[in-house]
Figure (cartoon, rainbow, N blue to C red):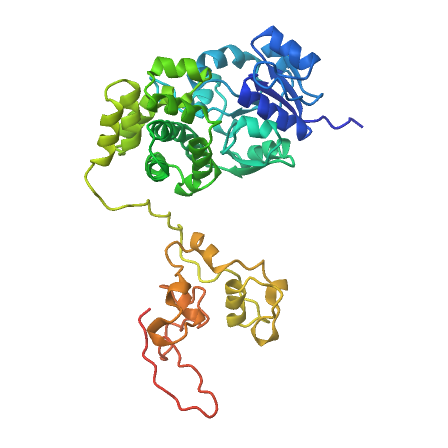
Length: 466
């Protein structure tokens, strides 16, 4: 019988983030080979198991090897992991494309937008190599290379049009300290990673100018808003920007001194020129190169991105630091808006679960409202054995966007204790409603009166509109 072949991954190149991802893959049991541009880096990784250019104090897994030959690195690779500057991707990929296997999945770690074409990394990959979108994945999230090299806990999102490919790479890089999640929103993950670099520049500038946490929090929050606006206009899922590839990456990059983009912005805020800040940073700062391209995307989709526009003008020396701050603070006042959540498509559902002859309708409804399995359901029916696990009330928002009500705000509605049925606003009869919808020819009123308890006088109850 043929022995099982382990998963193989080729990581291009041996920079800080590429080395960190190579270590994650090796720790997860994947066979990893790193492509380095310089012979001395490849030799050091093979002999001393260290990368002297970025992490000379951290020992790499013994199973991790390196080479300067792209053909040797790509031979038999299941995954090609690209970690190079976004602006040099097209030229390098054209040289490597002939060596890429027919089944190799290409994973992009890049967080930038190409100048001139305004294309994202995944679009450049499909254009240059000719592979389908189902073979191109993106890894993005709050991942600072130094912390990952130290083995500190981290998580990321792997997005791919093919969920199977995303799951395979998820398995290839899942370790005790690195937890990957999967998604199909490639556009949202890439835009979240690219725009957050520009917002981090703005936060760094504010920090360098001596502004406090209020200003930095304002930039982070409003930066997330304009990132979401652009993403929705380009077809991304707005919920992606509330996840690891959106808010998570934004917070880590804007708040950590390990962030290149925040550090670059801090130099600018202290009065250094773009050339001086580039020399002081000494590493690729994607936000500097991508700001103008992201702003062009915003204009093409008629999206307002004031923070990105001010940062771009500052990088091009069109405004001073004082003028940049005034340009943001003196904008006309307006309401704070968030993109509406996507509505479910198709005919409205009447129930979350199919009816069961042994479970009364009200018991099934309570199973949704009370996820604690330790308590028996009404009427002695323990229906969690008959239906899927119950979900908390708040989780129903992704099923019925806009219909879940904050029951804490209505605990004493009209001077009486709140009732469970007041937690939901149900515009459709029978949808999670313990009162069954009347048949079309049923002469009874739409809501039946509550049975009168023994010893109590019946009180007429007004029929509330549905």
